[in-house]
Image 1 (cartoon, helix red, strand yellow):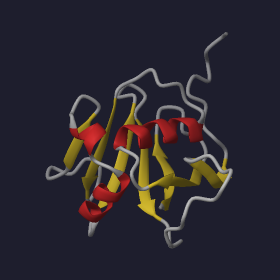
Image 2 (image 1 turned 90 degrees about the horizontal axis):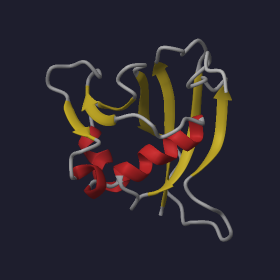
Image 3 (image 1 turned 60 degrees about the horizontal axis):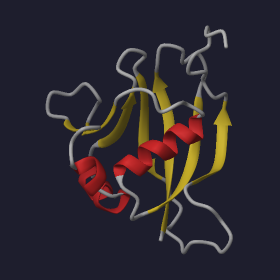
Image 4 (image 1 turned 90 degrees about the vertical axis):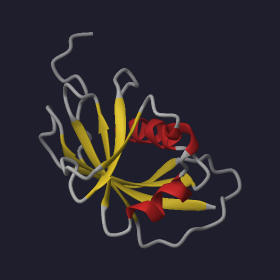
Length: 139
């Protein structure tokens, strides 16, 4: 089954514009695979640490954090993490220096069967302008 998630950029050192997308991802994908899918969607390189967090805000004292080096990152799936978010929010932090913060939420779209000849995860809808991970970098 495929879940459609809304990925919204909330903050980041170079986050000068709004950006969000709808990401279609298999429900059995791990949080590590979700991390990779978000990076692919936003066009970032996988060169920094990351974590997922469940709480009222990312900075809440009572937030549950699942870090890149926690074994849960490969054990928790999209399907298993979503029920834990009820009444709270799911956040994804990438690169603690530049602090790219995204909010992840379920879309209103119902789960559906994978479509033949379609590669998942995939971005089905996007709005705004993607941020540049390294805008001042000279190649």
